Amino acid sequence: MSEDISARVQTADSHSRARSARLGLGFWSLVITQFQGAFNDNALKFLVIYLVVDMSLPARQRDWLVLVVGALFALPFVLFSMTGGFLADRFSKRSVTIGTKWMELGVMIFALAALARGNLGLQAAGVFLLSSQAAIFGPSKYGLLPELLPEKDLSWGNGVVELGTFIAAISATVASGFLAFYFRGQQHWSGVILVGCTLLGLAASFGISRVPAANPARKFSNPLGDLREQIRTIRGDRVLSWAVVGNFYLWFLAALLQFTIVIYGHDILRIDERHISYLQAAVAIGIGLGSLATGYLSDAKIEYGLIPVGAVGMTIFGFLSATHGISLERAGAYLGLLGFFGGFYAVPLNALIQHRPDPARKGGVIAAANLISFVGVFAAAGVYFALAQGLRLQADEIFFAGACMTLAATFYAIVFLPDSVLRLGLWLLAHSIYPIRVEGRDNIPERGGALFVLPELTLLDAIFLAAATDRPIRFVTDAKPFIRAARLIRTALRITHLPENDTTNGFLKTISAAFSAGEAVCVAAEAASVVLEDPPGRDQLEEFLRETRAPVVIVSVKGAEDGLLRSEAGRLRLVRGSRLRSRVTVRFRAPLAPAESLHFAEALNLRKATPATRFSTPD
Image (cartoon, rainbow, N blue to C red; front, side):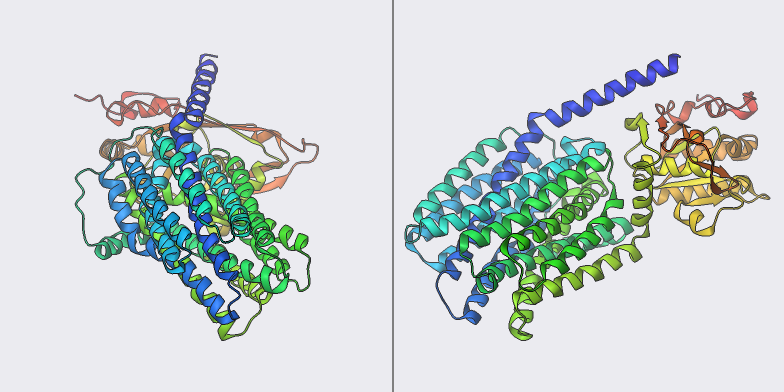
């Protein structure tokens, strides 16, 4: 009874902290600041592009100038992202954000003068300078999220920020079309409006919560050398490197679509700037709604099992968008749905890139990921020109080529990160016949080694525990409970059998390898008791936990026995007459006292809690 009361109090406290973080002024000030920045970036870029299209130039010259503007928008992210990463680590990210907003104000005053003079060269320079400011701001923007929100709210926070960003993009693409149309010959008024927006963003930036510098001792280094170092860091983490590559492709595809939509509307649909902006807005609305939906469907964790869903949806609606002779309304619907599934793809990738790096190196890693993603934007300009002018493809045929590329990217996602397919299966299970309720989610350590302990471990327990958290877990047990489990299942769930003739050393080697890989270890009490009853093994385990400061978390799984499935010797079978849906509760209790004073045997609920099977008392 007391444990239930304690769990309810703990859950209430957890919900209170989550509400506090989600409603905090600091987080929403960042959202507003990012919204305004994204609005100005897109509004100025598309305004200049629409001004180019309105010049009635020959198609080849028009396409070339459109791509130059797009390349000038992407190039600063390649040049200055690493500098932004250094600043994000060396100084408070809040201070960097405020500084970049002052920089933006100066750039927008320059853009106002360029628009008033009607000088295309100066307008393009304004796009380059504004993008430079955004490149320096980017690492601080994304780095602030994990400092303002707990890890369990990171997917939700990314969903909100992505929704805000793409609502800004919607507003900007629509607004730029109207500005180009209604202020034709008087574009200084467009500049005045954009300067006013910058002043609002600058004011909002002062509301961001004060945060300390992550690495105030960091020295400025050669950006190329720093980039190589950050890439080595990224390559050392398989999931992080996959997320960076996936993000690269997403930005490449988005840029390719932006270039194509402008020409598609002008050449194929024969519509003006206002209606072209509606197509751009359809994509942005879709991405925003998809991002928000992904944030809520992630269940307070980074659910990268939704990435294959996004990839498949993008492929399907990419092919449909390439259908010849469709109306403006159908084109808008297909592009909107393509964007919606793009949100499923984008949010988990962003959350992984923000969460997985070490906090002291987070700004640099995010900067490198940002740079790589805008290499994709830069490459999209060249690919579009090669397809349009080299292969003479029409805009709808370029949509088809993009869908083929996305099909290849989907295959890449499934082959090179099979964990995402496993996560998708777990997510479907948890949202169908076995709704999972997680209690004590705050008791799951965000990173580093951890030891989860269950009274007993079955295949269903392993499935529900893996579905309850985004932490990679290695399940350690003897062969008996999983003797009939298929090898594919054992591999997917990271089930490791302890050797019968060397249980202690096998357990210690497994836990050491798992902690080194950033995995948690889950062990059943019965298997752990074998180690604890071996004094040398118990001493080694005690010393290892002390050195790594890995917490021990007692876990319970309830409700699995009431559903359609039963687990016997590692295989699942259907049970007739059972309820169609059964709620499963996974409870993570508060971590035990620091490893120096653990009474591990008692924590395992062993029948014998003798001095021989418990950790020694520290001096």
